[in-house]
Image 1 (cartoon, rainbow, N blue to C red):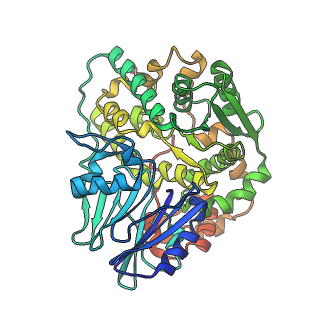
Image 2 (image 1 turned 120 degrees about the vertical axis):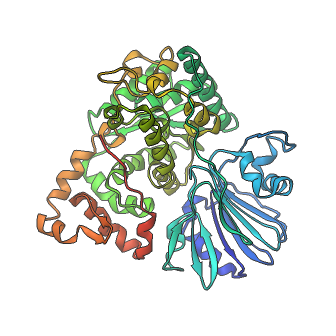
Image 3 (image 1 turned 30 degrees about the horizontal axis):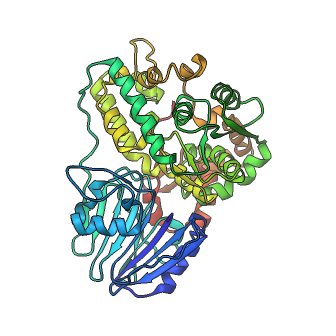
Length: 485
């Protein structure tokens, strides 16, 4: 399943069918709606399959839920991937079942009396909710809710909703204790955990692929995947002579991948902006920029018939990939900042990964956000993430972990934002500067008492967004890129 829609204490299947129809890109091969005594649940799926769902007890989920084992438990690895596996977890552990799950997920379980809805700790999978005729409605995307409610809100990551209790937080937060004392041990362990994380995600996938920008994060995933399968497909996009295309080709040739690239031009970029803003459900200027390049690479991967793509999202948050962190001298402040960035990803980078891939009906996963990788990374001292005094090397420990698996010029390549490496930024700025006047921007930049648009570019995106999502409540769902180097 890749999209869910749920209404509690309502038996209106037409409502759920309409919500699902507006999210059909999330999996149009199979759509199902099931009524229970207290709730109606619906799902979309990429697989053609007939599901036998008991109308008294139903589980629907978005995500390839992987198992996590805190203490003793009986559920087998293969069982958790099925709907009955979720029901069994809920039977065994009740609301605590979320602590036995790894990977991105948004799920709902109805038992005939109550409903239980939950979202993964970092919000890797999307989920929103709204009030509908005094009922509560949940959906994977905002666009499914807009015709039915004026008050649309983000389902908070790391929370669950139970019909008898309302919302409750189950995730205690990211750890920040330095428990690793050996740089060699840290590098070795990170390499092992990432290879395992990649293996968990592609070992049962017939046609996997990887987005390859030539940066350290995506290159590491390709190196890890090469230890598991032969001749994996990799994908890169950019304008003519962009650095991403050049560096991606170096990695692809070094490892021997089945590599594909696409070169786009200014007209193509401008033409897809309305579609990208609509699918992205955001107008944050930095998020939209990077989503434009992602749109092209997702389309390219879909054309080549891959079933699942791996993305390097999350590496910056785990290993200190943002350049502005180099100006912070207090390591405790850097730790805090990394945690803030990771917890904000659900309305930023993770949202981009989800919406743009789903716009092309393409399954995805983010191995850096595997629970074991994430927990280990936050136990590594900051001084090994930003290494050196004067001009620290970002993500140093990750680079060391894979320095023997990749070309030196890739391992030590300076990080660039995806949209910069793909040379998209200048194209967009030039076009919009000619489209919106200084006077227009001064007049329209304030869209709410506490919300001021940062540039003409953001105003341009906002106007498109507003046409699709007019409800003022949706502003609360918009993430703002925290800092750009």
